[in-house]
Image (cartoon, rainbow, N blue to C red; front, side):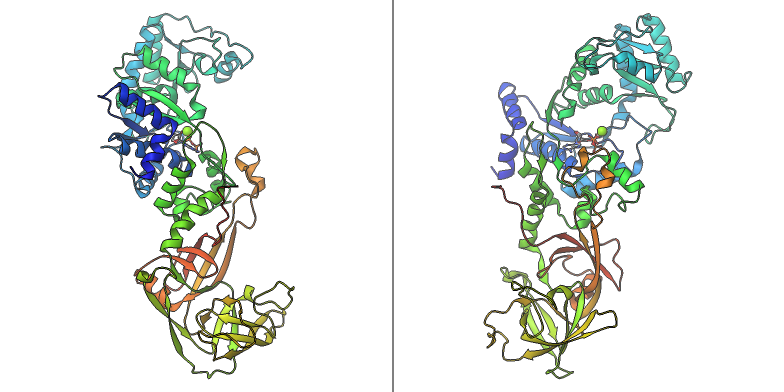
Length: 558
Ligand code: ATP
Ligand code: MG
């Protein structure tokens, strides 16, 4: 049994399923993932996807993909396509065809009529506001609508009228007749059908009445033969209605609902509604902006499907709500990229180093490893000449005692090459350093320098070996840990969530990328893990997104 299997079998849902199998040897596990096509999938959905699909895999069962499309006002075909792509990208395959709740509209209509005929549903004509008012609160019981005691015949006719479009939106709705004094507000005669005159992406103009989520969901589960309907904790009370509907209609199968806690992730917003506000207000560039935890955003940032699956496995499935550390997600991708990413040098903010004691035609080629611990990943060649670029942050004019990088009169080693000593700086009229003149100690290739036994090592690129690149450094989008809790979450946007640097990568690496040869995930030495941005890169300027920094801040013992 592999670790993933163990992990999913041992959580509380796995244990329930194990027990169900013991009690019923004919059981065939059938789960489903039911997204509402009103936005892109995010890492929270990934938690649910992994759970449903992994369980199906472990128990030789099936997992359906069903679009929960009961609200044509918010849904869009572009989300339907994006959701399928993301699930495939994560590495999962749903059972047979895709399903839609809308597929069952005729059946659902029949079940609604069945409830009416049993005296368990009625057409209400209170306004939306009145319905809310009559519903009561947690402390105050609700009161009956004056339309509650209509005859069955009257209700059948009115429901028919609703279907034919003879009422306007909001003028009538169908409600289940349960108990206006129930301690569970969801059971106080919930609305189960409403009127919407908007064209539906699947059923077009066939319907102008639409079932509510609670009515459609349990019946769709039953029609599809779902055995275990897994959802998040906020649906705990809805379970009463879920079971009530199944009990009072003539469905054959009665799936069971189990709830687990939602994923909340530090510094992130997961609600699709709030994410779409960020897009509308141009705070972020779209659903695939690498600063948001949508699957397409994470993908663009350089996360791999396996790193996301591994994260979902690590966080586990429980009934306790918690806020997961962002560094745990980073730990998962870093662990993977540390093993696989090709090491190469990049300079994000170039500053020229002039090695005055070398000839202007000086050329040396060094063969360097692609990965320090994996010789099987091969080597590549780098060019060394009398002028190289280093990163501006590796030189300081003013420094304290702890400072270890390059300074005037100080030495440093150029990675894989020589020790150099800074002797002079040149500035432009704005007081910016434009060049550092250095002495190159040519006796230090693979050998120690005489003066400084252990100089720091910095990355560099020869001025004759550069390919222009834009580097996008991402930081948290919010500057508070739990923005989801804040009503005014937009006021906590981190102004430094994206920092852009214009620099260089090694020429051969750039040329290979353009010819689509080899890897697009890199560790730029000393800087971090980066991946190519396929969308914004151009032939003469490559764009790289920083996936994650080098240091692991996640500590499971903390
Ligand atoms: P959102 O608030 O992001 O719009 P939602 O619950 O409305 O989320 P749906 O498309 O209805 O989104 O969700 C599909 C499935 O994914 C549901 O079963 C839901 O419980 C699950 N899901 C959504 N968000 C999370 C989350 N943060 N953690 C775990 N599961 C989630
Ligand atoms: Mg929803």
